[in-house]
Each structure stands twice: as C-alpha cells, then as structure tokens.
Image (cartoon, rainbow, N blue to C red; front, top):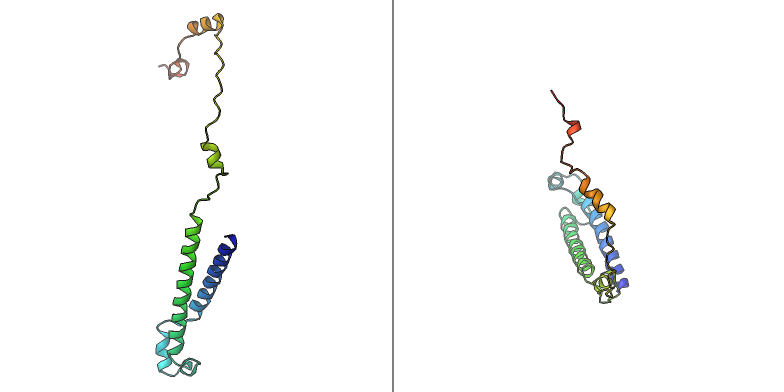
Length: 131
C-alpha cells in the first residue's frame, strides 16, 4: 500500500512540475496578434496556432492527472487503519476497577483553625484608598 501511495505521490509531483513548465512556456492572448504581423512565431514547429493548441491540450491533460492523483491521495489519507493497536483503541478500553482507599479524617485542630479564620472577600480592605 505504501508503494502505491509513493508512486501516486511521485506522479503528482511530476505532473505539477511539468504543468508549471508548460504554463510558463505558453504565450498570452496578446502574443497571437504579433504572429499575424510576422513576428517570426508563424514559422515555428507547430505553426502559428498549432503550438498554442498542443500546449493547452497538454496542460489540460496534466491538470487532470494532477487532480486524479490529489483525489487518490486524499482518499487513502482519510482511511482509518483496521488494526486495533493504535493509541485511541488503548484509551477506549476500560481500566480495571481499583478499590478506593477510605478517606482519612482531618485532625480536629485543623478544623478549628478553619472556623477562626476570617472570610476573605474579593477586594482587600487594606488596598482601598481612603479620603
């Protein structure tokens, strides 16, 4: 499975690089007007408009390959593993019940100190400015 994903990933990278190169080689729509006045591109290998059609069709094919590779990687990336040895399955299993130890009672002296301590309020009275 990992070999298949690596091959699809390599195809995606190669399609992206080839698509970038083809897009940079293509001329804009304004370049066709220069060919009509004899700028020299009319004598190219594909003719005056043959290169534009060839490059745009090749770019469309590479974009389709890139899209299919991306969707394939997204599909396989979202699949959950069938094995149950993951961390999530370990956390979902209930732990063995451990009996709780009885709580110790607080000493009587500590309880008496709590009763004598004044209750604290939100604002300390020593920090309030007086007039």
